[in-house]
Length: 180
Image (tube, rainbow, N blue to C red):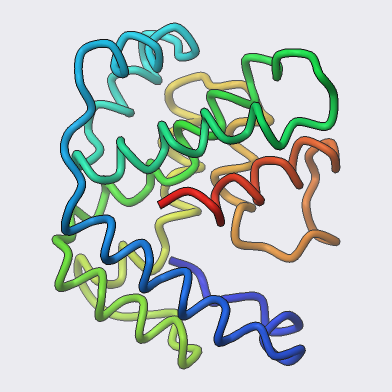
């Protein structure tokens, strides 16, 4: 997990970020694995290589990314169905977490470190703290659309740093923040 955007934290959003993390933790403890229907829906938006990556997610991460993908349609800037890359980006934005294979207690430690500005650590904890860049590398290797790759790397960046079309990046960020 990359450090929260310091400009937003300086504007008093640390409490909101902490509440978001607390909601995600509660949802993680109670999340069930997605069922076959949900898996089939996700598969329609992913290439074969992306599908293999998505299946590496822990069950609660798959549930979260499914919720993000479903929500991004409701946050969409138009009435049209989002492009395939947007739904793939929603489903794969956290794929770098698979490189750390960190269980919930370790993720809590990582979140606390992030809240206080720590961005490096050894071992699996360190890989988790770097999951956006690790996700970028995994998606590049899978041959993903460059916009999907970019979102995996940039989804914790401040909006003025995003390189994706602004309306879709805003919809993805809103869906990620709202989904548990």
